[in-house]
Image (cartoon, rainbow, N blue to C red):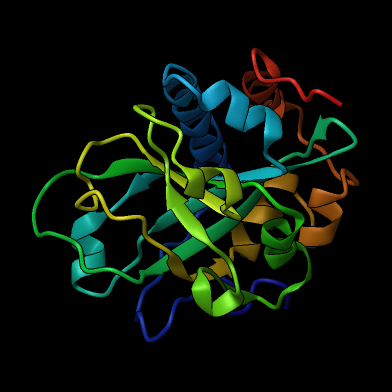
Length: 219
């Protein structure tokens, strides 16, 4: 069946079983994250130039330390000036060690190149946003636009200063969360259908509006 084993991660014995209300909650939290991001100088320009964005409203540090889930990510990408409806992913790994303790924080991966977006559009059910996928990753800095931000495939923004020790980190294990996708669109759907704007959920409109306001594409 469509729901068999779609959201499990690694050897985790009991992956969370999410439904439509959970999916909508992740979308609504992502709207707040976008609002936070736009308050940072320089972010509006990056959003204008981005081809997609993966938002993780709550990145659970403690869970990562003990090998559990890192968080649920909400992905939207842009085709011809229009943002897609969200597709859902589970992020299970980081390439750098995390410091113990602390609260969950929001993390966003800005996909600046087609090469980065292609990881979501063409790869299998599990993939990476990092060097092993041939991608360059830089940490967002509002203090100065360092050269790596202009050439990076992926720019990482974090809401909590020092959440990852100031290190630009890579998501080494990203997996499609087909269960959340199906719950949100009330039908079996593929990543391609979502990102190609073939399916819609009007409850996602606030997310697209948040991304478009003050950061509309220049083309």
